Image (cartoon, rainbow, N blue to C red; front, top):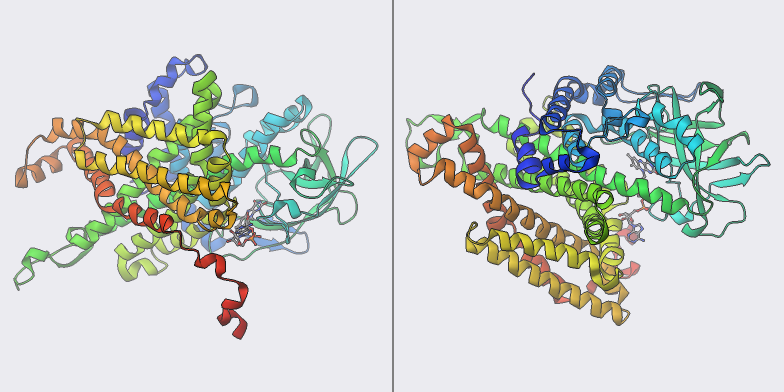
Amino acid sequence: MALNPLVDTRDVRFALFEALEVESLTKIPKYSAFSRDDFDSFIDLAETIAVEQLYPTFAEGDKQGCTYVPETKEVKIPPCYKPALDKFYEAGFGGIDVPEEWGGMGVPQAITWACNEFLCAANYPLMMYPGLTHGAAELIEVFGTEEQKKTYLAKMFSGEWGGTMCLTEPDAGSDVGALKTKAVKQADGTFLITGQKIFISSGENDYYKNNIHPVLARIEGDPPGTKGISIFIVPKFMVNKDGSLGERNDVVCAGIEHKMGIKGSATCTLSFGDNGKCVGYLLGEERKGMKIMFQMMNFARMGVGMQGQGLASAAYMHAVTYARNRLQGVHVTQMLNPEAKSVTISQHPDVKRMLLWMKSHVEGQRMLCYYLYLNYELEHLLEGDKAKESQALVEILTPIEKSGCSDKATEIAGEAMQVYGGYGFCGEYPIEQMMRNAKITAIYEGTNGIQSMDLTMRKILMNKEQYNYSVMKQRMMETVQKSKGIVEDKYIELMEKGIKKLDEVIEMMKGQMASGKFLHLFMNATPLQQAMYMLVMAWMHLWILVVAQPKMKELVGDTKGADRDKLLKENAEAAFYSGKVLSSQFYLGAEFPKYFGKIDALLQGESAIIKASDEIFTGALAE
Ligand SMILES: Cc1cc2nc3c(=O)[nH]c(=O)nc-3n(C[C@H](O)[C@H](O)[C@H](O)COP(=O)(O)OP(=O)(O)OC[C@H]3O[C@@H](n4cnc5c(N)ncnc54)[C@H](O)[C@@H]3O)c2cc1C
């Protein structure tokens, strides 16, 4: 296989098998047919497909972009994507986690998402096509009738048909409840849909033979707001009784967006029912559309977190490769020596700082993502209190993962560009494309502002007796207990202090809620989310240290100086565990202390934002 510049495979295995002990899933009846070797084979296969098929289309797909053909209202995706998508589906990744009944392989979520990290790192704009298809099919799997499942699932998971997610309208972005798309019931039980959806990823494309749109709409006469929303399956081509394709449905693409990044992903405006003939089939019950779509949205939010993580991983890996090869300047200890030879930039303290900063974020986030997906699985596999605890963790960690990993995607791509210097800014290296691709992850699938409000209000303050938070706190304390005697006290104390400080903030917010100071809560939602991301990352790094520190001691012991350098050169495992320990120590000792500044700012209770009425933004008025 070609060199993997995308994801550190060794670290993927560390997170999955050494820290999270995912192999233990093979003891559960549902997964008893799998072995650790099987899990390794899936990861190897994902790495091969990512490196050999998807990544070679990363730059090319960006150049080719998507093309709209006004005469036929069709969209052509980058031609180079098609063979890569074929290989993705041939390898079975379209239904990797899906039951065999629908042609899937039934692989556990944590392994599935580790595979997805490779695929997203390689080319996440391409992955939007199968990603949305999988999400739409999953909706039908959970809420569809037996007939709907038989009609759509196998074809969607195999990649013959595609899928989308149709929420957004010109006047209904974050406020989905404001949608205007209308559904009128017909005598035969179907519905006629009319309206327009914008920004629909994969909305029209020339890869799939049919496109299945889950569409949010309001049935005529139903109440306004989110309570009156239903969801409909709207196929691009009608499906005959025998499963073959019938007539074209009355849904067309009216155009595509020209975007800063993810140019290979078609972002479409879809018109439903221009000729009054767009047929939709109710999915689930009437007026339960938002609840149903949330199933897809929650999963998609986790997926967007992974898009950010995959991109960050690829940016970091590229920066490491570049820094270890680029000769520039002499070593800082040789600055006064005119004979000194140039060294690679990876040896300059400031570049090391950037690399370690990226490494610690990428590795901490990897743990966070896999831990989240593991709990998403356990929520359904376990029973009683244990299942409830996993559900609580999924609820509270999803907005943290989505916002944290997506915000960091832009920052990490920016830092990677900094490592490249001027070359990073230029098109011949992939970093500028990564930077252009990163930002959207913080915007779609619920902006990070919306995620933060969801975290603060629904997931913490309005959650009965703050159960979600208490479960997370209990799990953090368990890691603290395990770390005693293994990890240096100073890191443990920081973590303990961090938890206490968050308690203080939450108590303050509970008081604000009780006294009706809602504006205070909403203005602080994003700072709270950002602080919680840092605390969760510190938790993940403490966990990493619990596992990695003893291994590092075993392999490196007290070896120092030139002997240590030699050992790390010759022994890849010793180098790996040393890297793990340094990365986590860096996060806890150099990055996490900034958390306390964020917490102090929250406790300060500054209310300037509340007084900032439209009139004070005079710059805008002057225009
Ligand atoms: C490339 C791309 C792909 C997309 N794919 C899809 C897709 O497949 N399907 C789909 O349905 N949609 C899709 N979207 C739409 C996307 O989900 C929306 O753009 C996003 O939800 C934000 O809506 P908006 O753009 O209307 O921004 P607005 O809702 O107007 O928000 C603008 C700003 O105001 C803030 N804001 C808005 N309301 C509030 C509030 N109540 N409180 C605090 N802050 C608020 C937001 O956080 C944001 O910062 C896509 C968008 C893009 C650009």
